Picture 1 (spheres, rainbow, N blue to C red):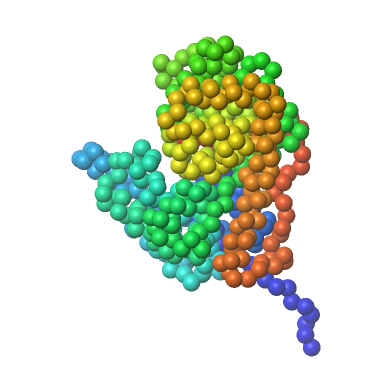
Picture 2 (cartoon, one colour; picture 1 turned 180 degrees about the horizontal axis):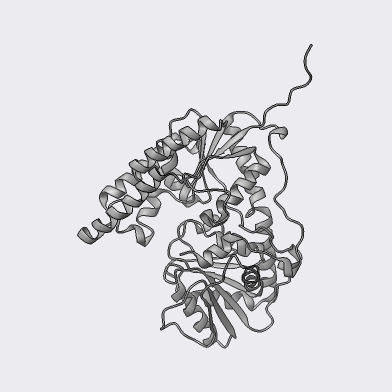
Length: 428
């Protein structure tokens, strides 16, 4: 006689990355929120990383030493972590981990190096905000990479996309690079934006309480003044003041060069993300601001826009890279031409605040964009659809917990930004 009904084993998704996805500091908290969303809406997550082995550390340390020597000799960086030696090492590491912890499908975020040499028959879902081809001539720090290093990175990226059953990106910019540069099959490429890395986002009522009474508060967040377009934000402040508009710019996360100095410029160089009181200060700055300025010079996405939207805070950003992946022009902010000076940003602000009802509508649509698109519940449900296509079958309710990532409503004093937003402030 049968022993009784059997329980169907839960689907197991292997999280592939050499860092620890359970650590909220990994990739500014994004890995943590991704893993939680997968657990909630897709299936059981098996953490295959981190790889903290001496062999992997030896490779990384020696590549760094070679780079220092090569830089002195040639002025170039010989190689990045996108190299075959590290990729093969990581591939073997994850092959061993899969033998110890069998999985049904693999999720590999920003893990081209990890999966490029991974020998497995399991379907892989690759997720990243930028391709190697898009980044190498875009971010200034990659301009010094040698031809050898560039070729290595190109091989790694092409192999990762080739091995993946599905490649997922948060912006059309990255999608276009995958399809047009790497020849990815459009039927296997998907666009799903990030969510806001907030454990306890403000309630809708708190977010919509925003209004401009007199002074216009501007906020700029980032550790790199130059790359984040700090000089443009400063121009914007001066232009508003010249028009007779009372304004203040708060810079959070860095100290501007000495020439950028003004009584209406407030600088907060650092807030400790591990200190509860200082985390509340970060939250309060987002609640008090009227516009987030994001005139970035290079950006894969701009997750700070997702987080600003949770606060009902409109973003005015440069239209570059993957910024459109989190900023819906006219909905949760405005996209400015890349070459637009600070005066143009001031023009847009003056235009919006001239009609209080227009600003109120922008606050409302910013929060709506967070609730409808820029949150991890939406991301998790969308990833479930992708994985069902990869597996060629529906994922049963029993296989996932289908719990919401939404948290109980928070009062003003309880709003708690997570490591992601704070990491944008304190990342070194």
